[in-house]
Image (cartoon, rainbow, N blue to C red; front, side, top):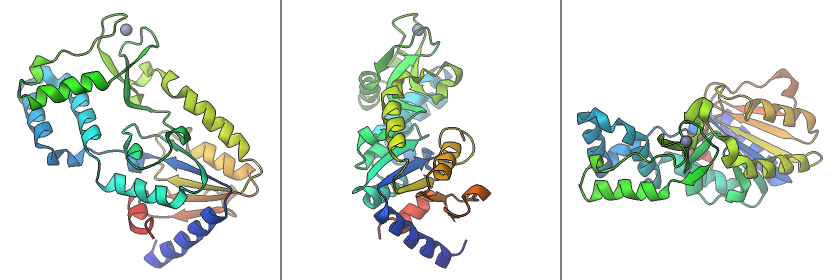
Length: 270
Ligand SMILES: [Zn+2]
């Protein structure tokens, strides 16, 4: 898609947001953290070297990634989120994301208007799913930080264990696969579904940003359905490769063929 075409469609998107009563935002795979910037954090790099040398420390890698997510507060994803926030902050919005990295929380989005059905790094759960209890992860994360900064080494740490069965705890997110405990996001999910019910006769602007086809039943298909049934909806699908619109939505759907992160960085601030 050429630049002029994108500029035109961006103008239309801004008009639709301005005119909308409500704005529904879906964030997908293009926003997944790739941990590339971890090279900018020498203490985390030396911890990862320690893991390279001692395979017994392999279990610490997700905990080091969590440290990175907590300490890395800039970069392209945060810039994209900040620009997106600037575009919708005055509106009645709700965000659903399949990302687990919580980068969106580094912009000023209202957390009450955010649902993360794939989980995040805030809570631990039993890796074996012996029960559905969740435990805050922060305390252990502080221990990891201390072990790295004091240079006592990662081998001074012990993997956190489930109080119920003694098996290792893991982060409460979709990386647990079939053991993922879905209780963590239920409260926000209820708010989300209630919010969606309110959109029915409203002027709704739908922004589907970088959503691919790995988990289509979370954002992609439900958004198409919402757009289809709402006579006053406008639907923007922004994606580098999967931007095609279904035939049913050809009258209210607008495709922008560009990576959604780069789109927001380039156009979102104007
Ligand atoms: Zn357990």
